[in-house]
Length: 101
Image (cartoon, rainbow, N blue to C red; front, top):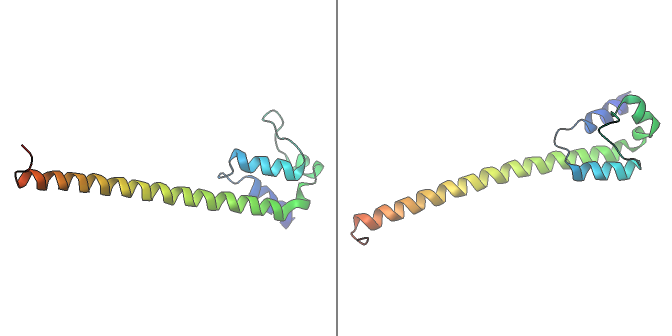
C-alpha cells in the first residue's frame, strides 16, 4: 500500500512537465491520453508500481527543476531591478553634474 501511495503521489506532482511525462511513458512503455483517465486500475494494468523508484526520481527531478526555475526568475527580476536602479542613478548623476545638455 505504501508503494502505491508513493507512485500515485509522484504521478500527481504538479511540477511534472511534458518532458517528464515522456520519460514516464518510456519507462512504463505506454502512452497516456486525456481521453483515458489515469486510474488505479490503469496503474495496476501497466505495472506502474514496479517502477516506483524511477517514477520517484523523475518526480523529484521535476520538483528540483521547478525550484531552480523559481530561483532563476527571482534572480532575473532582481538583476533587472538593479539594472534599472543603476541606469536611473547614472542618469541622475550625469544630469546633476551638467554632463547632459
